[in-house]
Length: 409
Image (tube, rainbow, N blue to C red; front, top):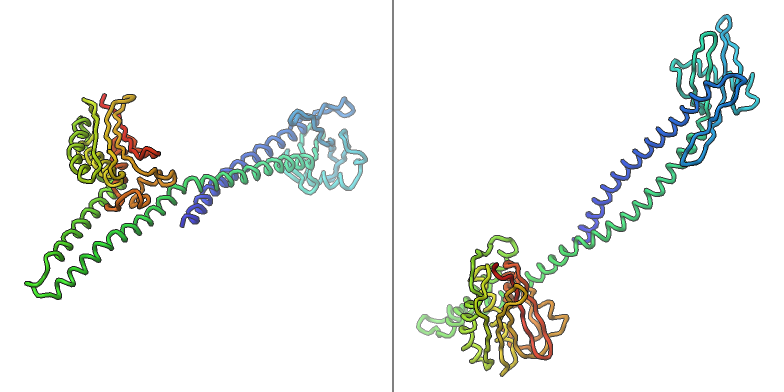
């Protein structure tokens, strides 16, 4: 699918580029043709003023800084009786043209045309006819050089256009890959999300169905309470999973925006620390916290409370046995900075960047595997909603999560 999308992107881009280049080529051709024809007409108007036997005019024209000489000749035509005429070549660059069949054919074609200015296609000549009363004076300019110049110029421009087309084709291919990379990444994440969600839902469903089948096979008075407890426990677990998935789905669709108000992040951090203190103590991982006073931000209190709770819950789950969990809130660079750290084995760099992916869990050696792997994804969404950042750092001392957001002005 991604490959087809890239090909379609390149095809659309190149269709637009081709259309633009075609218009440009047509415009250049029309402009060049008009310029060359104007130069040819300029020569005609200059040589027709040449007096027989007089000084030959300068018939060179400037093209690109170079002087180009166009072959020409002039003829004086005297009418005779019975529709006949007498013609004399009065000047030009052609030799041995007087009293030739070619001259006769050229003059017949020229005199047979009504417009005083035109083209004799069979001989590739442009003419200009002027009536001087007793006779007609006609100037002819060779068009072969004019057409050769036009072909040469257009050939050069077409080569430039072809090179530009190939260059833009390469650029379009690179842009197509760059533009579709987020789509490809989202597509892979969506497939992984569906696979992981199906796996997470399968386990509690299997437990619920197994216990329900066992219960249905026994008389009512003989049904053990532990099977009912299993069904209730797994049902709550499924409900929690679905709620977390819905939270992320709403964040993706922007259907649930936080209600921003002035809140004390200091109070939220202290409340969460007090709530998790007994939990951490029972897990054998004491919690220490240091919270700066009057750290006020503009945000959603419930959402920020959930973010802090997720970070503390993650530290309790994956902290090393007997290690101390630390929560710190401080002001730094016009930002509120919340840090939650726990000792333990360092997380490899290739896994550190994936901690905020949905359903992702690092190596099982870090600790227990309860939960669904959605907490940190939800925390990252909340941080983004509050124009803040959430990053993970890991080293020999342990792992820490740093959340930063702007202070209230």
